[in-house]
Image (tube, rainbow, N blue to C red):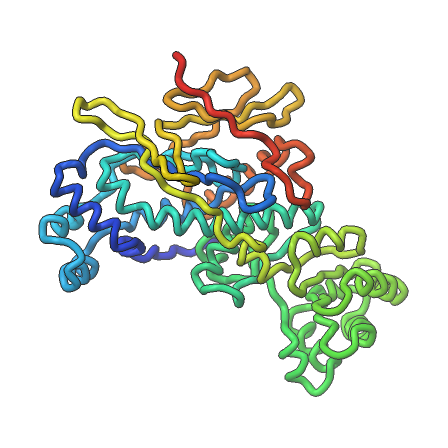
Length: 444
């Protein structure tokens, strides 16, 4: 990866909903704001037909947490708009998260009921983090889950993230990061490269060709500037003539051609034959044009060397949110002991209690169940993998979970986690989660 330059995380304190702070005010009034509490982020279900999800966004969340401060500008805004009272403002002015955050490592797979993130702190501290936690994780998990399906469908051929022009500018950076965690090779987004050391790539668009008096002039200018190993976009006018012009300009050292329209399967076949006939057997073919996991799978038999994916990737390929919720599952009682609490509303019930999780692995190294212990870690059969990591201890973000290092670590975790799953996980047809989630009540 390219060496990153320091980037300043903006103040994240007001990336939150109004009612988080009014709840805090009411809890301060009732004397319950300092009660020790455990909140949990989890998905009640996966997006329709998906067989697994991918955790992403934790590193971004931790980076934001380190700059989650109510400074003069934030406090003045809250005061001027009467959001909270003076007592609450004083509490916020001194806010520093002092609790513990645990959860699944970025890049790991998750299933319905998986305790993806747990926050243990005072109620007040955990409460005001809710919106930030859900906004980051719901977006990034959705993108990473879609990206994982795409890279699996690509079968080892590189995928390039190219969706910056199809989403919000900050969402574009987050999407690039999540995509690389889930196996994408690189991104077109330079800000993602700056912040996270992600490899960036890009050559030219149709406008560059249209700028010049002829396609040959455009290709000549591009290769003169970027070298013959560049990729030339050959479908501005006529694809066959575009390929011939590209070879005439760059010769047999031409790095690649890009196809961005038409029947990509058929087109890739005859473009490969034409390149080979012209002696360009090493020239790569890259395809773009509104690809998703299904289009990538359909191109599996075509002589394609790389895929550029944009709109479908940054919108979660039909599932733009992971559907995660953040619920209070345990809190300190009046006697000082923790008690389990749970929401009982119809179709939105939650399971109370502090959770622990492991992935049950059989003798062949394949996952057979997600086992969630309520109140205690489930018994390990010997091959099973414990899933919860500690990201923040007593308010201190632990090393290795933020910045470029976290992206590398998450990418490796994604690769290893997918290898644990049964083969059915890679099917694109709708289906149930590839392994069941089992809950075990504390018995010891």
